[in-house]
Image 1 (cartoon, helix red, strand yellow):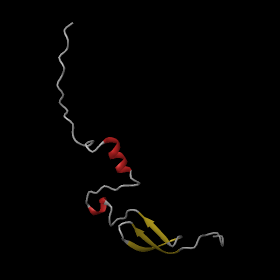
Image 2 (cartoon, helix red, strand yellow):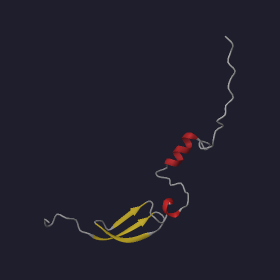
Image 3 (spheres, one colour):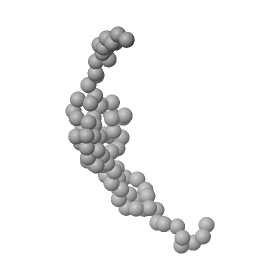
Image 4 (cartoon, one colour):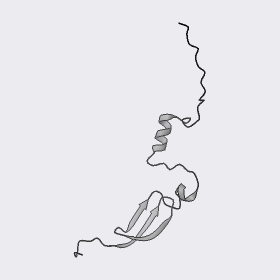
Length: 83
């Protein structure tokens, strides 16, 4: 390896938005993450909406609150006019 070209590998604290934190090693002293294995729905088994930069609110405003409500698939057929 060449000397003096590699970054320093130091102890690092990872902090999640949920409040969890843990120690690891990295080239930066601190890492901030939005979601981790302590709060991610895949690992916790709970369903929760993860809002990234207001995208969920923007989607709800655009399509309305009843967008996911099942619509009636059976529509009455209009009688055809006689020719």
